[in-house]
Image (cartoon, rainbow, N blue to C red; front, side, top):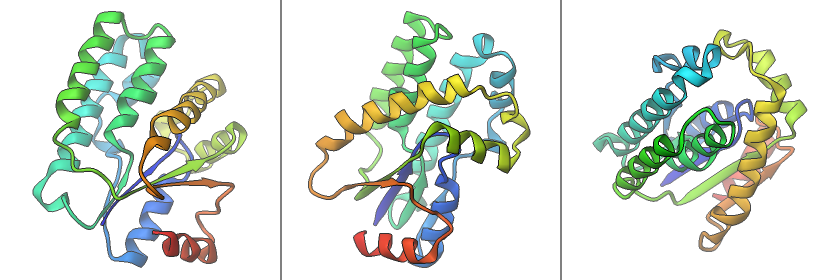
Length: 196
């Protein structure tokens, strides 16, 4: 089984991936936050590092999702589509990447995504912006200290649009939307597993 968990920064993806992996015997694929050389630089100077970070994110997630050992029985924190439809689009709308850079990232996405095996289920954790900001502050990642509420709001808007248009075209019950889901509640986790 291939499951992906998507959602905004601070939604609880890592927590949910960890718990589901343990309970279901799946191999977890986490967003390689510590491995990304441009993430911290991006938060300090987004105009300078936005394009470089997006390229790095595409390559890291693609590599992770296509490694031979990661083809089956995985649960992934993020999917490749998020890199383009959420983060690249947000950077473009904010004027942090140019039209040409956006086009290059689109070409990367289209070339890479056709080689990524499809997911059986995608779980979208939907959170309001205040909860996201609270979660970001609680976890205390140094590189996220300066994240502004407006940035999270713009990402949330793109996530909601993405889920309502692109993902809802998925067949059957492939998409599970979690509103006000407590990732630390074992009863809620067990009920979610029944849906998978």
